[in-house]
Amino acid sequence: MAHYTVAALYKFTPFPDFESWQEKIRARADELKACGSLLIASEGINGTIACPTEAAMGEMIAYLQAIPAIGQLEVKYSHADAQPFKRMKVRLKEEIVRMGVPGIDPNKTVGTYVEPEDWNKLISDPDTLVIDTRNDFEFDMGTFKGAVDPETKTFREFPAWVDEHVGRPGERNAKKIAMFCTGGIRCEKATAYVKELGHENVFHLKGGILKYLEVVPEEESLWQGECFVFDERVGIKHGLEIGEYISCHACGRGVSPEGQKSEHYVPGVSCDYCHDKFTENDKERFRQRQLQLELARKRGEVAMGPSAQPKAKRLERERAEPRDIEDI
Image (cartoon, rainbow, N blue to C red; front, side, top):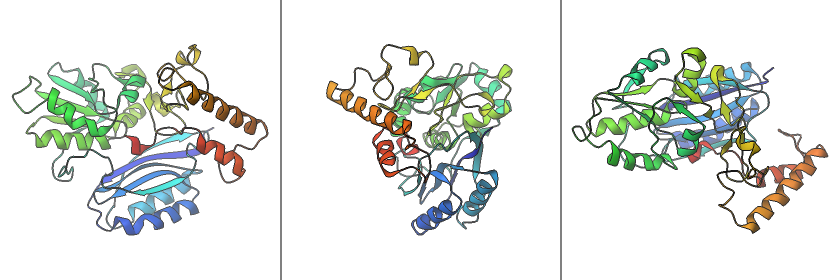
């Protein structure tokens, strides 16, 4: 039985006094034993949080929505068997999802939302260019049938890819452009950018992949693989069930069941992707870190939450954590 309620949330909204809310949000999260990561900026709020009960999550979401500048949030709920985050972070940012292009405002210009139930029809149309706005390591774990991979390392690289491969109207043959991401925030900003270039028929998946996996039956789905999430669960499958991927604590990528059988996969040390990307000194340091972590676990010193002993907390901090939403 799942013990934690997880909420991926965001909203683009003018938030002029966002700095004054940082400590107040963190304090309320602490009261409700919420953990996760929230980014706040003058353009809005973005993040993923987990609470030990549905009631606590309801109170946390109600608190955020009561902030005058925020109001109704876009929220996708899922679950976890254990607390998927180690602590609560509330960060002040210039952008809630960093594109690095001044003046892009989804509150003013944005693509057309497509409900998950209507998504298959749109992306099956041969006149539609389907673009995965996420990064390469996310695409590798799973994507929609026929989607284009921009091969980006971060979302900041996305505008340059669009300029080169999509261009302005008339420079390419695509009549419709459909974009998607994990929860909706990146594709919302991506559509704003593409619309600014002059394209008219621009669409994005409402609620993102998470909503699609929740409401579209697996037998009708065009999704292939698992959806990477930025916490200890690593991957999500249809019905928002926790997937079979695990995190490589050396590079932070997801490792498939097949990859876990590879000669290059060493827990805490390397995987198929990163086995040749670290020096032997790095790997030895990773081995020692993993050994100490396993010894601490055997002694019962590693725990998720406030009962963990200081040494165990230090070992967990030194281990590479799953990629944070700030990495996108």
